[in-house]
Structure formats: structure tokens, C-alpha cells
Length: 607
Picture 1 (tube, rainbow, N blue to C red):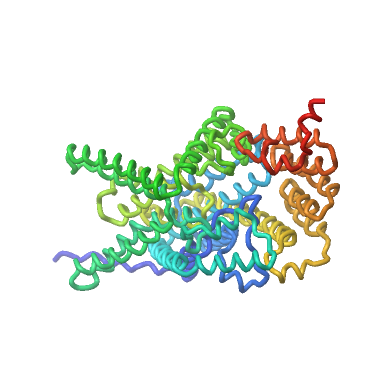
Picture 2 (picture 1 turned 90 degrees about the vertical axis):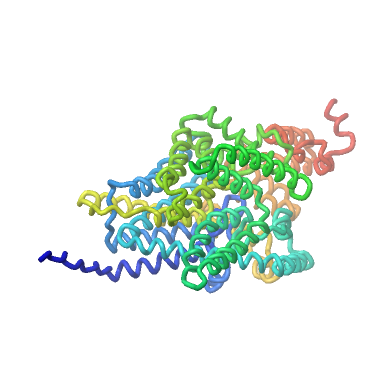
């Protein structure tokens, strides 16, 4: 008589792993609802409400994600990890954590680095690294939780899409009324903010329509997959599947259209081309037809942008970004131009006539290669391509791995055209999708692996907590300072009435002593109150901190003209124009600048 094999007793999941899993699922749900913002830069302080309860009603500052991911990593490490370093998921995790942190370092110490921008970049990458290691540990301990995280992320994205519709049909009108009420009450609203408030592209819970478009794009394949799974639960199955898939695609696709993102359109076309040309079951003649279709679609998109869209200005600007990155890479191949170096170099050599100067090239590989060196660019490119190489064989399997592969294709194309690594919702969401598609290897970790991963994880968690806390503290002080200078409400104006500007200025400078924006803003405040001498002192301090900012020279030129030194003012404007030759506001002939000088200035200067 043949003996039956002994029954296997399922392993009981430890309670601490279950608790960690639930917290991770909650975090995945919050990604698009709270962390879908762009990372703050030195010119844009975050919004910090007065009450803690208000944090549940607004989008959290981007760098709070680094604090949260650092805490999650510490919790999962304490709960006990089972990750081994001898497999593909480990290579992915180490490349996206320690590899990215190493890639960001050369640009921090390059001679041309802007210290504040470099530290913000480092803290952002540290937060992503902590998230990668945390999800990896959870996936190895209980892989079913990463699937649940993926589902929670999808749910958060669907809610975000619904909020985008609400914004389109109701929110824009409310925002216009709010803007008008601010202007009527005498509140100074910067022109850049007014443009944002009147932009009819939806943002959902995110701070940018391009950010929302990128997150919606990587959500499309999983929603299609889950629609099939859920549809099979109801009869007739074919009708139910079509209904679930159709509702999901219509909901997300409509929101994508309302984002009006050209890079999303191009990503869809290119992803379709990859699918057709790599499919072994499609005949060559159909591939040739597809090639013609791709060309026609791209030409049609160009024609639509020209006639009904926002024109070619931003497209030409994006191409110019890549040109500047190539110049930086050739000029500084080893350590790059330093983080922030792109901004200053692009102002000098840009070819387009748009006055705007971007802080980064909107391309992750180009950003690292140009500002942190060729090796760093290669590391980022390897991090983007590795999961696609791993999942390449599954691209037509129809499985969950196939779904994640196409999400990864969309993610990679979008991050190489219109995005960077500053958006927690997209980065963290795609990372957890990748892990949910990786098989957990059967071999248990060895003792040296456990300790190595524990030490590495502890170090990265500490770095993430420390760097992001300092970044948030700096943003908070800067936000207080800017609110004092330009109160956003009548209540704020009354609260700050009679308080000295030096207190807020010194508090912000104590946290970010090398940020030229702080004395520059203080100088603007003194100048608006008729105190050019105090303004001049601040502008000179700003110039000492960052002599490459043309706006400081223009401000000093205005002060010089107010004090009667017109030749000095002209020299300063000429210096500003050399730093940013394509920006007409730095030319003496610009109407605002000509108002500084007397009518016979040119004749007086010749004498």
C-alpha cells in the first residue's frame, strides 16, 4: 500500500509581521492621497498649517515621506527580516537603495553644487531607499502583503481620479473665487501662483498635472488586470469582465485626458510600438503597418498640440533641457556639475526664448549624468532597466507579472520624458508593484546576510529620518518667513503686524545658512518699504552666498539707480544679462529696466 505524503502545516505568520503588513497597506493607500506632491525646492516653501488636525485635509509635504519610510524600515527590521542577498529581488533592492544613494553623492561634493539643493536631493533619494528596503523585507517575510499593497495603491489612485473629476467640474470655479477674494482683500498673489490657480488641467490630490498623469499611467494595467479578476466572480463572466475593465479604463482614461499631458500620449504610443514590434506572433507586414501608425499618431499629436494645445514651446524647452544635460556631462564627466548646476548652466546656454529656467532636466538619467557624473547616470539607467529585463519574458503571459511589466514600461518612458525622482507617489507605487511581481526565493538568509541587511537598513533608515527632518525643518522656517513677508490672509497680516522681520529671517537662515533666497526675500521686503540701504545689505549677502543668480544683480541694479549710481546699475544689469542671455528682463532695453534710468542716460554714459 502506497503511503500518502505527510500533510504540510502552513506556517503561522507572526503577529508583528501582520501589524507591519497592515501599516504598509495603509501607507500604500495614502501614497497618491498624501504623498503625490513634487519635492519642494528652494524657491517654493511647503504649506504648513497651524493645527495638526489640518494635516489630514491637505497634501503632506513631500519630505514627510522620508520620515514615514524610515520609520517603516525600522519597524520591519525589528520585526525580523527573511531577505537573502543571493537573488534577483535582492539585486533590485540594493540597486534602488544603496546604489541610488551612492549615485547621488558625487553631485553633492562637486565644486559647482548648490548646497541646499544638493541636500534636498539627497534626502529625497534617502526616503526612496528606505522605502525600497522596507518593502523588500516585508515581501520576503510575507509576499502576500505586497499584493495587498498594490491593491491599496490602486484604490487610492481611483479616489484620486474621482477627485480630479470633482476638481474639473466644481473645484476650478471655487479656486477662481478664492483667488479673486485674495486679490480683493489686498493679498499679493505671485504671478506664478495665479497661473497655477487658473490652470484648467486637473491635479487631483497631486501638485502637478504631469505628476497625476504619470501615476494614472502606471495604474492603467493593474486596473485592467483586477477588472478581469473581479469580473470572473460574477455571471456572465465575459460581460462582467468587460464591465469592470471598461469602468476602470474610462475612469482613469478620462482623468488622463483632463491632465492634458503630451508625455503620457507619447508614452502610450511608444509602449504600443514596443508591444507590437517585440511580439513573435505578429507578422512582419502588420508590424510595418504599426510603424506607419506610430508615425501618423505622433504627427497627429503634433498637429493637435499646435492647433488646440499648448503649442511647441514646452516641447522645445524639454529638448533644450537634454542638450544642456549633454553639455554638462561632457564638461564634468566624473563628478558632474553638482546638484543645482543644471539650473545655472541652462540659463547660460539655453536656446529657447522662454524666460523660465528649470531646476532639473525632467529626465532622471540626464539629471544624474549631468549633475552627478556618468557613473551615476549609468546606475540610474540600470535601476530603471533591471526590472524590465527580469520581467521581459512575461510581457505577453497575461499574468500579474505581465501587468507589472507594462506598468514599468509606462513608468520608465514617462520618467525619461517628463518626470524625475521627486514624486513619492509614483516612485514608491512603482517599486511596490515591482516587488509584488518578484518571486520569493526558497533559500533562507544566512547569518551574515541577516546582520548585513540589518546594519545597512538601520543606517539608511537613520539617514532618511535625519536628512528629511532637516529638510522639513528648513521648509517650515522658510514657509514661516515667506508668510510673514507676504501674508496669505487678513488674519496672518494681523498676527504678524508689528513683529520684526529679523526674527523670521534669522530663524530661516539658522536652518539654511547657505540659502541665498532668504536674504534675497528680505531685501525685497525692505525695498518695498522704501529702505534701499537695508535691501542692499541683504542683496550683497545673497550675492556672497550664490554669485550665480542673475536676479540678485538685477535687484542690486535697481538699488543703485535709486541711489543715483546709474552706471553701476547698468553694469549690474549687463552682468545679469550675461548669466541669462535669453531672458529679456535682464536687458537694459526692457521697459521695466528703462524706467530705472533717466532719459539721457545713454548720452551721459558715453561722456
